[in-house]
Image 1: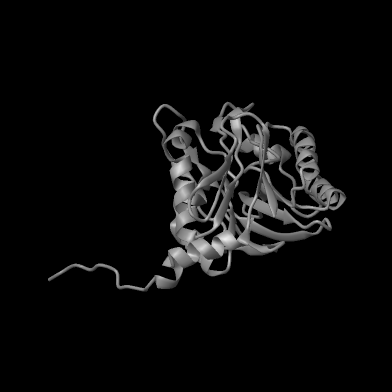
Image 2: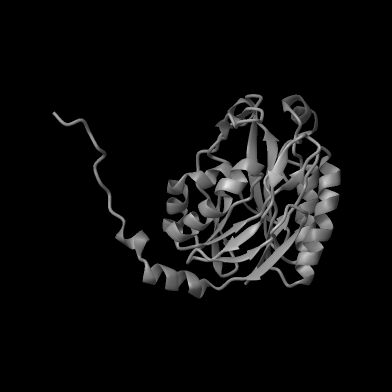
Amino acid sequence: MKIAAIQMRSGLDPEANFAALVPLLKEAAAQGVEYALTPEVTMIFPENRDQLRSVAAPFDGHPQLGKVGSLAKELGMHIHIGSLPIPLEDGRFANRSVLFGPGGEQVATYDKIHLFDADIAGLNAYRESATYKGGDAAVTAPVGEFTLGFSICYDMRFPRLYNTLANAGANLIAVPAAFTVPTGQAHWHVLLRARAIEAGSYVIAAAQGGNHANGRATYGHSLVIDPWGRIVGELDHDEPGILAVEIDPKAVAEARQRIPALANARDFAKPGLQA
């Protein structure tokens, strides 16, 4: 199956972001792509909470998502919107990933579980939990011959989620992201390769890249990694673009046979204080 990671530089206007996405998806379809993943915060990369509240639309009847469904049907491929903010009743937002099938239907949704609360030297503090509510369920969905596992950005630092997805049958795991430049330079490649190796799964990571209208800078470098941990494709820059590669489910079976870590895993007692 041919898959594609779509790299973007999303701004503050949802309609402008959608307009920038359309030609990238059409180019992917022209290359024979059957599944395309977009980055985290595809439809809006907000400057602050007030700006987000002013433009974020409810999930039901969402204007850009409706257009994505129509585009998926037109192009006849799976389109996976890496994430967009969805208002919740408590005043916060879900950071929600949405998968459309080639018939234009919504196949599955996933709300980002792990929230990024951190202070990074030289940068403003990130407090996702002040704006977003974390999800509480792992999600998989069929995509052609593959079973897709869902995650979003900061989730990649939590191996248990990827182990759970792999044990639920996932052999292709999506990681839409908006990684900061300092953490991207230090951790992006090694974390994604580790998750692919541990899960014995393909990993596709679609990234935001460059300097955004909200003042943030993101790392780019969208990747596809095979179940042996090899990078089989990379956009080695932070400009918008498409990374399209062929993947084969046989590679998953071979990797898991060579290193049967999922099958060999055991439960164990947690360490306790010794008398």
